[in-house]
Image (cartoon, rainbow, N blue to C red; front, side, top):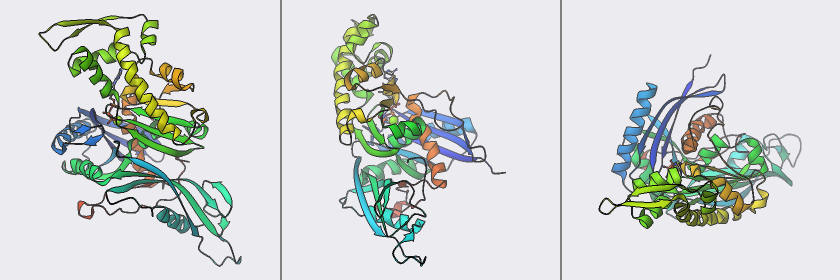
Amino acid sequence: MSHPIITTGLDIGTTKICAMIGSYNPEENVYQILGVGQYPSRGLKRGVVIDIEETKESIIKAVAEAEKQSGITISAVTIGIAGDHIRSLDSSSTIAISHKNTGSDTSSPVEQSDVNRALESVRNINLGVDREIIHVIPQEFIVDDQMGVKNPIQMSGSRLTVNAHIVTAAINNVKNLVRSVQSTGLNVQDIVLEPLASSKAILSADQKDMGVALVDIGGGTTDITVFLDGSVRHTGVIGYGGSIITKDIASIIQTSFQEAERIKKNYAWASAGLAEQSGPQDLVVASLSDNKEIHLDSFQLSQYVEARIEEIFVMVKNEICKYTELKNLHAGIVFTGGGSRLKGLCQMSEQIFYIPAQVGYPIRLPGLENNEYGPEYSTVIGLLDWNEKHKKNELILTRKDSDSKVWGKLKKVISEIAKNLF
Ligand SMILES: Nc1ncnc2c1ncn2[C@@H]1O[C@H](COP(=O)(O)OP(=O)(O)OP(=O)(O)O)[C@@H](O)[C@H]1O
Ligand SMILES: [Mg+2]
């Protein structure tokens, strides 16, 4: 009988830092959440650490709470990364399949070592000194002229090509993120692009096959991942999220950020039209000056919100269209992150993009189908699954955390064939 495996996730978000400790039972293939700790995040701006001390303090508090709830002390975490320093590109590489004396003189069956070499060689791109690769995500293999191969192992051929999606980050931003965690005494097991983690918690295999854009609207960033034919095709991060809407409200009506946040969550709609349809509500807001009260209604409030949502949607569309037209996303758009709670967001999206939209909840991990966590927990729940998938040899290469002396050197993690991202 195998023991449950303890698995941890640390989502270092712009508005909140959330630590989650779970267990995974490999025999029954089920996850369980054992402890969750959350603390406001003050050391990040637009997904990037700008104050290591502040970030460290929030991490300590969030982890301590998760440890207390679970009764487990952790030593390492899988963390998420985002921010508009993230870039992605497609790359491909071809290698000769090593000859195995199979009797045939030209072709041999593809072995794991061939796949590993192909994945090694696809990393050979000119990045510049200030960037590093955080993921190499194979999209398809080509064995000789046979295209669209998902798992080339055992297939016969003489040439193996891999088409991969490569995600890179600014080295200094990665360093600062890792340093914030290490300064608390925790090790970093893996660094995972946040939308990739979220997608594990939210999307079904069918959605990925049909074509879907996952849009995670957080506080400081909006992260986009496009899946088509089962694979990741595009990743992008926009340096705006729900906080910019709150700031707009605060500055237009001259109230505090906290008060603006409160009225946004309770009264704002993604468009003024939707606010009107729902029957405008009057509201009273505390003004910044002389304790005066401000009177407005949800229609007016939603006008301010609508302008910013439209702007974010244009950027989302531009990101998606870097890879494909919206009409090719037959499973539509799935919104997640705290920002997806904005009233009327999906209706507004459907009015603008003319494709189906829904809010994605983190319910895809086996055993967690009925969990009570909302869309702001998608990233941390997806992180729980990350290391487990690695043990099962998922074919997605991650920048492994190295010890701090060997900064800049990527440890190359060559995994075997995976099922999940295909
Ligand atoms: N009911 C709601 N209506 C509108 N916005 C909401 C609601 N609930 C939360 N939000 C917004 O969600 C945002 C926070 O989302 P989330 O917790 O996913 O962010 P984060 O992970 O900390 O940030 P990031 O991913 O950008 O680093 C805030 O801007 C908050 O105002
Ligand atoms: Mg987030």
